[in-house]
Amino acid sequence: MLKLSLCALGIVAASSSFAHDLMIMPAKSIVTKAPADVAVDISASHGVYRYDKAVSVDGIMVYGPDGKHMRDIGTVVKSATRTSFDLAIETDGTYKIVYGSSRGGYMTTYTIGARDTHKRERLSKSELAGKIPEGAKNVETIKMNRYSMAFITSKMPTDAVITPSNKGFEVIPVTHPADYVNGEEIALKVLMNGKPVEGVSIAIKSESGIYTGNQEPIKLSTNKAGIASVTLEEAGRYSAMFNYEAASQDPEADKEVNSVFYSFEVVYE
Amino acid sequence: MRVLVSSCVLAASLGLSSVSYAASMDVAFEIPRISTEKYARPYVAIWAEHSGESTPFLVWHLQKKDDEWLSDLRRWWRKLGRYDNHVDALTGATKGPGHYQETFALGDLNDFTLYVEAARENGGHSLVKTKINTQDRVTEYRIPADTELGDIVITLTP
Image (cartoon, rainbow over all chains, first blue to last red; front, side):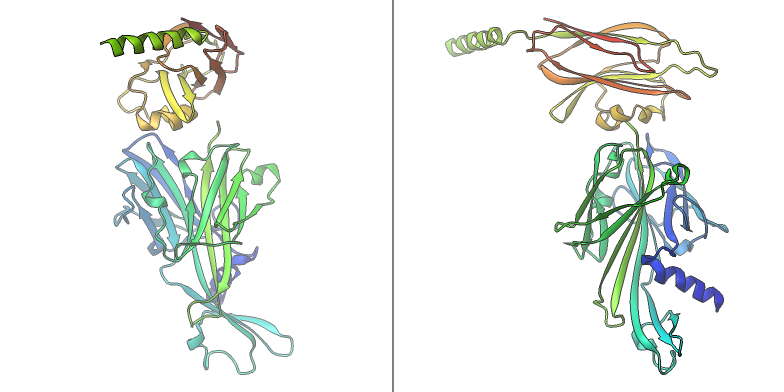
């Protein structure tokens, strides 16, 4: 029970600072050419480019330069703090790695008792009857859609994996991830079922913040066209967290929270 | 035939009216002697960028079948290397400290930025550039030294 509620806390707190950030950490994002093997670690972590908790092996999806889901990614090892595999790059182009739970998670929060104690249960609206106490107040069910992504480019960048599927909540690189250079603008676009989403909050944290003492995230928001741009003066590794709440399209929830964790590398020039 | 002749004359007169049309460019540069424990000869690339396009001139790199470090010439890699667009450029093995001079035909290039990039394993990285316009009556351009590249002198010859 304790385990369950800890886990639930991690999921529901996606929009708060208590959340575990999902972090896909490839050893490098630019590879000269195939064949090559790139180590990839995935962790649910408290810090940027740190390891805290392993993630489920089933939630890892890799898309090749042709845009197709790669069924075989070799051996995946789940250890205490991270889930790891070596991505075998056999053809040149851009690969996308995604980690997300296969099913959308539901979370119901409510308050109970004289002290208005906050409670959470992993329940959808139709599952609530009899599962939460009578007299529960402020009952709200959230549908969580949460995933992380990263890109690796071998030799020539390709676009198949950065082409929108126009399904669900998507973060699409406008500037190609193989072209992130310090001092040059990086643009990203957010879509919901193919339509631009305005007002998505984005917080970008740098790995170097751990060492420079400045861990204040850079905050951005998408414009009417669903686009947000940033120019990063320092090369290095970054993690951008996209967060967007909206009324639920799904009758099983009151609202939905979409979170995308995008880890990327900015090269120096 | 008459049409052809007259258009040639027109082209010639246009050519004369523009002040100078450089046919080639000498690039004299130095790979500095660097005193370090594990010295590796640097990768060097020279190319031109003009209105979003790149023209390769030179790349010196390890002459191995799979040279996995080519992408360390970072800007050159993004502009040319990863597209295999340097196949027509002068390629060669890496070279040690010394003075070098190479001559490149300019073709129809007349307004461009010349880039020189050098990257050394376990060492530094230099990326330097200068704008060049062959119409400007300037025949010599200089780029001051950086950590991995000595002074560079570019001379245009008609």
